[in-house]
Amino acid sequence: MGSSDYITPSYEATRSATVFPMTDAQTPKIVMAIPPSRPGVDEGTGVVLETKPKTKRPPLYKVLLLNDDYTPMAFVVHVLERFFGMTHAQAFEVMLTVHKKGVAVVGVFSHEIAETKVGQVMDFARRHQHPLQCTMEKE
Ligand code: TYC
Image: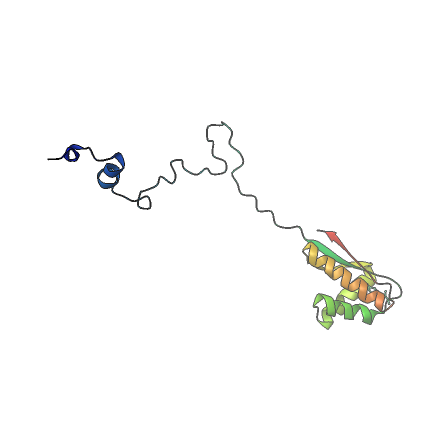
């Protein structure tokens, strides 16, 4: 019997063969020992913040058409049909309202759409050399 028969196996040999038979990839990992925090939950601070989710709707803007003494009625009717999707009858009615009362709301839109409509009307009127005015205001 040689002296090597009594030599204790190395630490690494014992660990890999007997005590820890799993490879590193097989070894289960502790992923989360602490539950995830949620808004409004006191985690020992004594402070609980607002928990209700805030879902504010975006503000809306009225697009207004203003009367003047020079823009032809037919041009205004055309503008209302072209840029505000009105039928001829609707457009004529709204044009008459502006003519009699001085101003009327011709549509309600998001800020971006209202801005676009105002720009389109002002540009179209200017190109045809009419003084027609169109503005927007927050509802
Ligand atoms: N007052 C104009 C006219 O008599 C018609 C008009 C209507 C002009 C509406 C502008 O937004 C307007 N020719």
